[in-house]
Image (tube, rainbow, N blue to C red; front, side, top):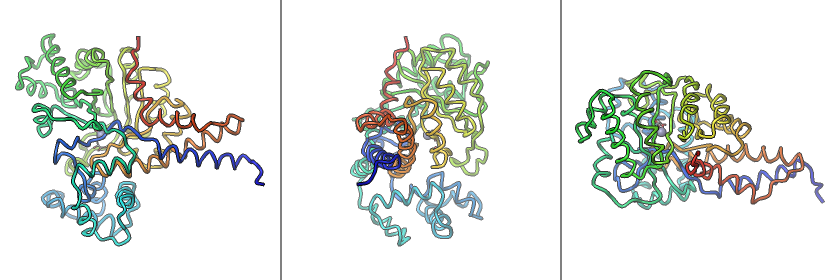
Length: 421
Ligand code: RAT
Ligand code: ZN
């Protein structure tokens, strides 16, 4: 008989955690995907996987051609060039490249052949509706939160016209132009029948609130969100801060929904790269601290782009119950950093956070993003339960299931339901 050793217990725990983590459906709280009713706005398939802006940035490390020449090509030719540079001329070891292969492999395609046209033929057999279900099943994702901007001329008309919602897709009201580009955003609101002037007087503020209410209702938005520069300061005498104080925060309190802040973006450091041209900078989290302290009844969701800010962010979340941290965002969504951040968050916050969101822009990406994240989250949890077992506190299967449910959407839902009285 095998003696029960600590190693054996750890192995058994690891196997149980791996199974629970892979079987528990996850709610993906931030993506750039769309309800299939939005038609071509929902991106999917091999060419869109290849021209993902994460891969565009990596390709230009190898390309020696003018930026404009690349941008003038049709999507399939851009995809050919990226495939050649990142998969054929070099091994696809980066996280974004590996992701394409994980996705294809889990979909059942044979990637060994390196045959892009055969892969294209396989995708041409699918319809978007069936493919959504297939990807959600494979990724074990139960719901997908979109990023919905009333300032986007492509998506706005459908919201205005109305459509039958696919219940698997929830909405988040994204308001970057409102907070970052006032008074331009004000002119846009004025053009749409809101009585605003460039001056943030009480009449204008009340019309901005009417705009937020109209769109929150129309979208049934789960939260309001903004991505902010690494230079964001709070308090400040900027229009952005006045709009936060006088319009966004009161709006979120009235509707009982969180305000998601995402600081750390250095926008368009290389505009030639278009969507791939943004970078990262450490931010002053004193500003987030000031926001949480100034508005204890407002629920703040936060994800922060810089690795350097992560420890301070965890400590802040220990101080403010109106702050819920989520995801390993954008340049942080790499296994080494997801491991480090998840470990740190568990050690400082227990289970009261949301470890990951996919940020998928192409539907198929949910397959790899969740597969890779589950591997890392499972590994960290197995170690932590192993450490508990070493004290004699053996986690039960029910407890493990309960905890994983929290991390995969339960803690987020609990946070959204807080009344903060
Ligand atoms: O991760 C990304 O795809 C970025 O381009 C951003 O869209 C970011 O996630 C954001 O929501 O601003
Ligand atoms: Zn995003």
